Length: 331
Image (cartoon, rainbow, N blue to C red; front, side):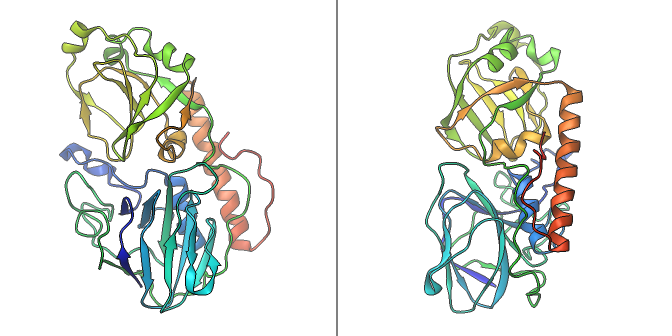
């Protein structure tokens, strides 16, 4: 059991999200980096979408009130137990003792934004619309519908289960914190006609993540794209998903993330497929970003390779076998 002594920049309870409530206007929410969430959960024998703490850049200070086991995955944010002089590296599960603290020094290694802290069985918060994820826009889910606050308590669903301590996620395979070109599918013709040539320009241009970046989306800095204002004004709002690249009236691309709205009326120039959403979720303001043209067949194949890669790593973990090489599980 962990108690929040000081909150971080943005710490929220997230799981696999609630996609089944989109018809009610409820964002999917859930982890911005579903791969790292799954890694943290599997280190503890949890389901891969069990609720964990998503920590953004500057983490909280947590007091260990009851000895428990935790796992970390995602960006390296300098977690440690200062009373023991012990680092808590990502990709490991660790026993933490009552009376100690967990602190985060901040991003390490120059890449990645979010890390996931899992507890045995997942974090024990109520299910809302089938998910334990925090919906910041609706102020529900997670712990009282918002980021962690001083005095909040994180309880594991299996508080007495310490059996998974000392595990290490096998090396190799997909790394969401690594910078690489993101696959980009063309947007629907009905929504892209108002920004002619935008898809080709997105692929040809070197972009940078602007300071306007949060769980709803990443605004990209670069040359403005052409928008037909008259055609854009005629668009009817349509459903949008995380990964959708909207073109704002000033020509800036906006890439939607987990907390994105369910409908939008801006032109859509392209869509980042599901296999690359974890990469999006780890981008920091100022990071460079490139797109590469892709097809639906390529996107499906990437998802299959990623799933096979994860299954292979999970099998090695559960058999306790060292694993040094895995050929690009993400494709």
